[in-house]
Length: 185
Image (cartoon, rainbow, N blue to C red; front, side):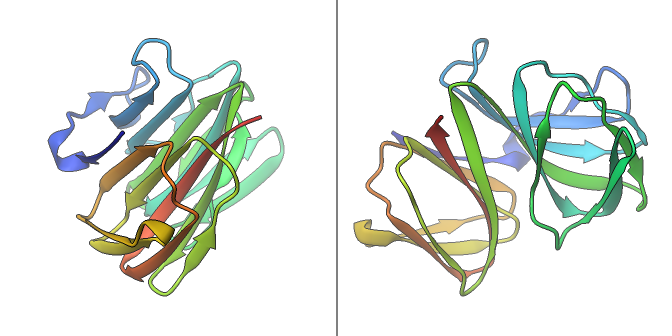
């Protein structure tokens, strides 16, 4: 099974704390009882992130700049940085440096985990075993899907999802994408 979701077609849901908006792009395998959730977050105000007990979070900035503080450890992140993975139950304070920021937020629950990589045109990545793959296009992108010989064209801010595919490698022909490999721990 595979499909593409365009963020432009997904409604914005306000955060409980009022600090931003979420566009839920994917919940897998089911909406209510998910093992993987991928969303696009627009952060509009500094503040605490919600607590997600038992969830591994991977946060990748697409636009803007901010800091995430865990106890006394501070990470400054912008659109050039690799993904940051952290325990969703740990207190995290977000401080905006830019007026607002946009991020891809990937959350997984055991027995699944993710490996997230940012790839620009000319980049490629080989895969290890895993049941699922998600690709998020930061900008209009063209991706060669390994041994399948398929070429995928994606609009900016769209998510491609595929389960049980025979994709062994990705090559980014144009654009910028975030690749999320989902595997069983």
